[in-house]
Image 1 (tube, one colour):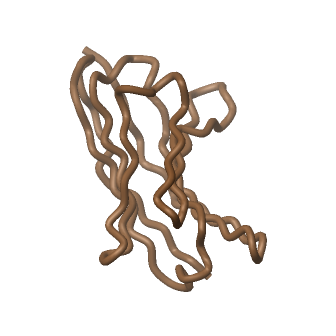
Image 2 (image 1 turned 90 degrees about the vertical axis):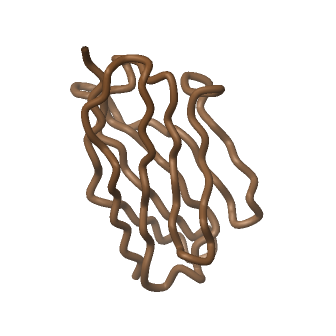
Length: 117
């Protein structure tokens, strides 16, 4: 089992920045993909960014050049740096961890990000 705990969400004005954190614990040795997803009201969950165990990253076109995914492997923490935030970035952001070997897929509880003046 893997446990994921997000933090760092909140209310920010358009153009502002936030950094989300996801602390991972448990059987993290099995994980080879970690990422961030978001779900806006009335919409489905969408991929924001993903990072592999080999440090390759992929970021959605809608947030490219504004969001950066990174991780601190020593502390088992995943980050999402969000800059130049827009009202359409408002959503619940979820941390995800996945093992392609076992097929296990884990989710955090989510953290609310609201971009509004």
